[in-house]
Image (cartoon, rainbow, N blue to C red; front, side, top):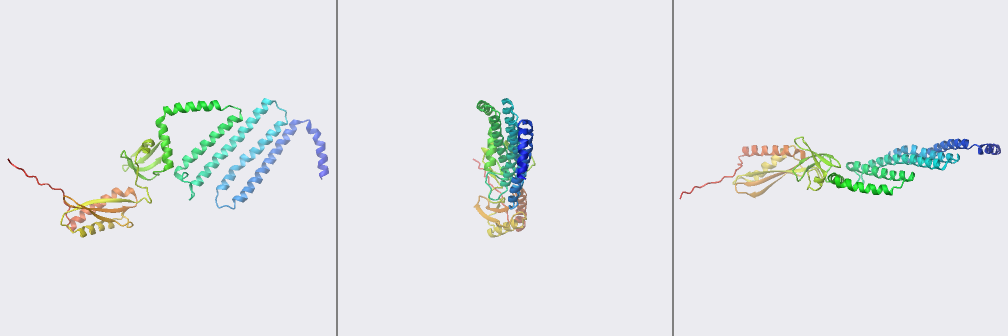
Length: 355
């Protein structure tokens, strides 16, 4: 069998040497076969390894690998086939640049898709990096895409023999001009990046700003943050203002619970223990006041006109604060009336002196 094959090759080789176009076609056909074989071997080997893992991440990456791997091997065959045709130098340079561009485009698309998959997976890991979380996923994904596309553009220029030095200088000057013209927009942009990275609040939190805005965060963008007030009015605040403000996050801390305070006065002569007991009962009977931590009653001061008490209770969510305060104040007023506890009001005696 080997002798027959060797004799066949010896007969075919002289015939092929004078026919470069036939050689090129055979190389192209062989490139397709080799590309199929390489793609099958590598992806199959990786698939065997991927089946041993618990995650679907590697399966998705392997699925993305098929096209760029196959086409890259085929492009190598195209270049080998073209080298057999004795093309003019200008055509060879043009063809090589075109092959590089196609390969670059394929692998950049693969890198962009793979980075999105990897970042999405990292954002949901328990021991994830603090900068890659569900709330910062869009920022990280856009940054990765920008870096990949920037690197791809640089390699594209190199593949076509274009000097990028002058382009970079022009881009720097243009960037300086645009930066001066749009400094407010850039300030909001960088403030948005810092807000997403530092995370003083997240979507769904209730925040208070220095400027007086209070509401639930509905959207965090690169330019602005949107708050929904209790009147269902959406307020858009530029990120540069938020970055320079003191932010009170009512939903921050170890839990979302918030403490409400009800200040009430009892007339002098009232039984302090009785007042404490009534206030504690009011807090414990309210369904929105949690049992743990336990409500508290404090005698804060001996005021000018009253014994000044403060009832403190915890609620599950900041959105309940207005409703709970209304219910507590109403219950205090009604219970004090029924219990005979007087709520004094300031009084002043005015004496008129006649000369």
